[in-house]
Length: 279
Image 1: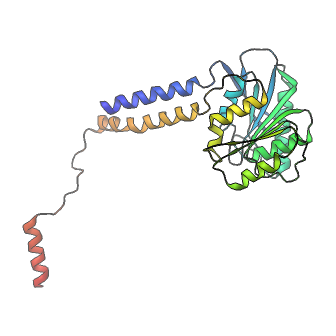
Image 2 (image 1 turned 135 degrees about the vertical axis):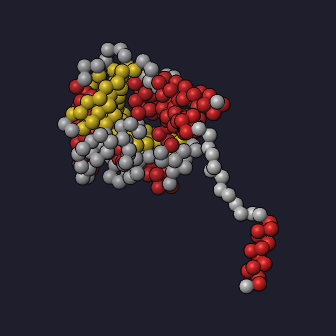
Image 3 (image 1 turned 90 degrees about the vertical axis):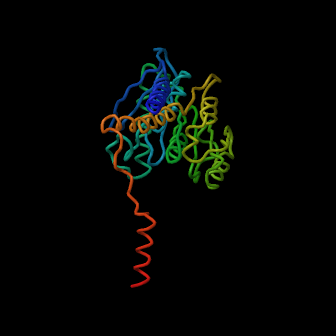
């Protein structure tokens, strides 16, 4: 009974955490030119600035969902895309040109929405996505700001483009990432921030990361807890695992005859030892 109560409490906490993520926001999903797009936006129908969020290699729009909550709650219309070869996309990833195509589809879609100010479009990317958004921003002067999280390579990046560039890197990432951030950050209208105590994936859920991204893109405002979804999902999984025990016990009854029988009878052991010696 105690185990069942613990499982129920954990499940309730998990549902509360997951259900409370992004309360008051509107969500939709669409596909444009074969590119899957998740849209998170404020309930207000007024015009808002827009942000395209790009995931890294082996990632997806779902992995980047906390940025949708963070930025939409601060008044942005957010589009999270699945690059070719990732998430819900059925296209094949064949090179950087495909990444640039998918980003262009997402930006064009965001700019065409009636609830978005087309003059205020920004980009946020992680790892492979960071490389993609910096290259896109460098080639498109109409991008208002760019955030590169864990940028893997800055080769060929101009010193003055993309404009208004923020580079974030985890304090526990490989030295290469910190070196690239320093190299790319050596330019006008740029900033480099090291987020302490996180590595290549956990940097996506660090509150400091979300505060820095939100502050760079717009005015300061309260930022939602970015790991709320992950923590809620973890509690739900733990509740499921714990709840399995009383459920199995209820269905199958208490375990019987499961203990192995050990032949530890001293007289029998002595007889076996005597026979071994005498033989």
